[in-house]
Length: 88
Image 1: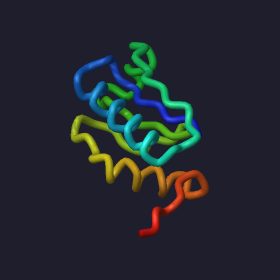
Image 2: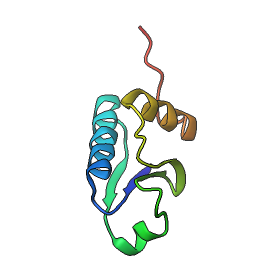
Image 3: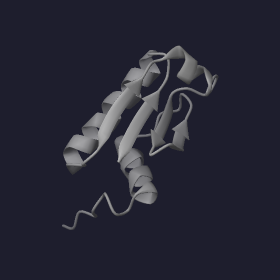
C-alpha cells in the first residue's frame, strides 16, 4: 500500500502526515508513507490541500482533517485486505 499526504508543507499537511503515520504504526500496516511537498504536485490539488491518497486514489482532501479513527476507517474502506479488524 502506498499512502501519500500531498500539500505544500503547511501545518495542516504536517498534522495529517503525523496522524497517518501514527495510525499506520499502531495498526502495523505494511505501507510506504510519503509526505509529498513538491509544489507542482500539490498545485494539482490546490486549493483543497492537504490530500490523502492511497494507491493513487483520493481518500480525503481539505483542511478539515480527519481524526485518527476516521483515517483508519478510510484505509479499511480503501484496502480491506491490508487492515484487519481488531477484535476485543
